[in-house]
Length: 98
Image (cartoon, rainbow, N blue to C red; front, side):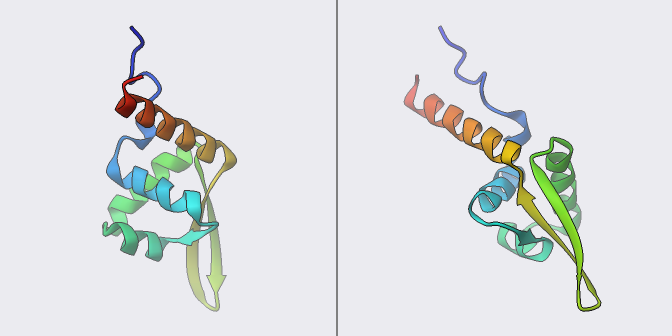
């Protein structure tokens, strides 16, 4: 019998990382404040999950200034989008019992 959870990606097991990737899959760039608000998490919590996804090369970080204010925004990489889609496919297969 096929192992139904073999293709589930551990990088996306956490609800915050799942939320980050879900948001970044449908948006080009999203800034830190917007992600924090959408996910209703603390700065530290969001930062740690962003770091984990960046380490896997699933997201890229852009730091810039808007006027004199620093702005950090994020985008899913091509590799990240592919890995997340494979994760979603694995979840769908698990639900269907394939």
